Amino acid sequence: MTGRPVRIAPSILSADFARLGDEVRAIDAGGCDWVHVDVMDGHFVPNISIGPMIVEAIRPVTTKPLDTHLMIAPADAYIEAFAKAGSDIITIHAEAGPHLHRSLQAVRAQGKKAGAVINPGTPVSALENVIDIVDLILVMSVNPGFGGQSFIPDALNKLRQAKALIGDRPIDLEVDGGVTAENAGEIAKAGANVLVAGSSVYKGNDPATYAGRIDAIRTAAQAAQ
Ligand code: DX5
Ligand code: ZN
Image (tube, rainbow, N blue to C red; front, side, top):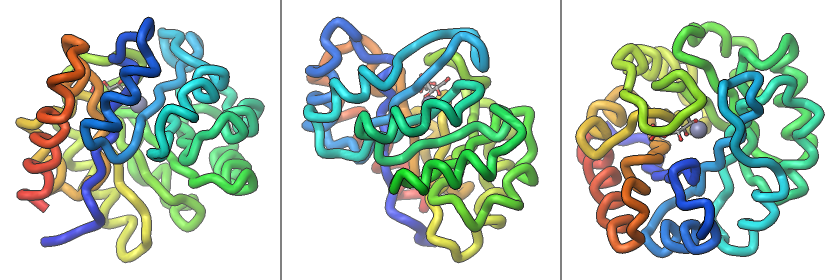
């Protein structure tokens, strides 16, 4: 079975923030497809990470798409700021507010790709009525807030359901949390084509290791597609 192109999106949440520009350059040189930017507000998730100023700061460092995962509620007030800072894809949680449809429309109104994301406790059916206004669906395979957690196996069922919901539409299916070279095959087989990888790329923060790790995840995913 072939699918949409495999994309590896390392999460800079596990980068060495004191050397963030170099850490982004290193995954770019290491062959990543996208740069995954985890935005946390200490309210929707129990952690605080980065804001639009950091997106703006890393924008000149890479030409690769900035895949901005908003773990914030409410999200709408910040969409324009992340768009202007240089995000290419802006992904909104279904659980972040009562108006997911409106939020996705707001992302597209900024000329950006719109993603919709569901937590492990949220069914795929929550996305049925926005499927025609998204460019990407993200299935969380951990409860968001922290890097380095273990992959929740039920995410594989949800990926299969999301793949069926997508059908022939030109929509990327992304997975985020606990992705490794060891489970990338079953993840790709379940239908995901965009694999976020935080700790499995950045652990140890040695740039010399990044290319090999990205390649291992990609090779496993492509072999299973
Ligand atoms: C979780 C974040 C993830 C996280 C992934 O809240 O959305 O992007 O950084 O990290 P790993 O790959 O270590 O689970
Ligand atoms: Zn993320």
